[in-house]
Image (cartoon, rainbow, N blue to C red; front, side, top):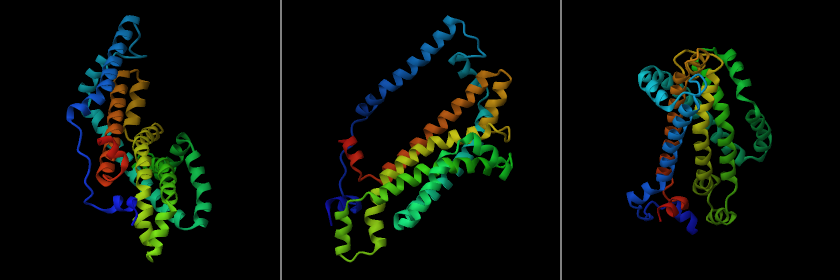
Length: 278
């Protein structure tokens, strides 16, 4: 078997030693400094220019409001998170399944791609009201359906690319050993598609949270982030609205990091991780 296949499937390939913790922390220092520097500049600008709170509240006010309203805003965030996770899971499973079919049969690929592109071109603001009519405004499935459409296309198109753009020499080698098509898929196509898949999943992780919140702007229970933001913003309670935005950001980042951790767990053999740890 070729070296690439060996690296992909042998579990006893030794990994590179991890870098020291201090060295890893130094990589994130500029981002942390920029973050807190930006908050300090924001605070100083609002105070110095006398910007009204209804337009742009100070970070200190937002932080205080966030602590005071944490229970309520977290409950709303947890409801939105369930919608995002449900839609993400449905979109990812559907995208991978159709990518496997499209990679196997050219006719399926040619017939499916136009519909996938059309679904990806549909704006969220057009899908959300229709989904509310189909499933009901208060039904979380209406928001999950919107998220599913958002996640489906990048997962499907990236997975399909990974399944089809493989080294012909690896396939010929396996076929010379009388390997079945299922073995070719398992030993070559799927490992080659994993980096493409996880790239799409990391994009979909953040898009799923955004899609769920935007879908909630068109109606839903009050204990959701989208409704919480719109109601408080319409009443001029801008710090409360910003508190919900913070929860949305935290959820998106956490979701992204979870996908990144799963990628490292399932693909420790990938060259990108070996180079990063070298």
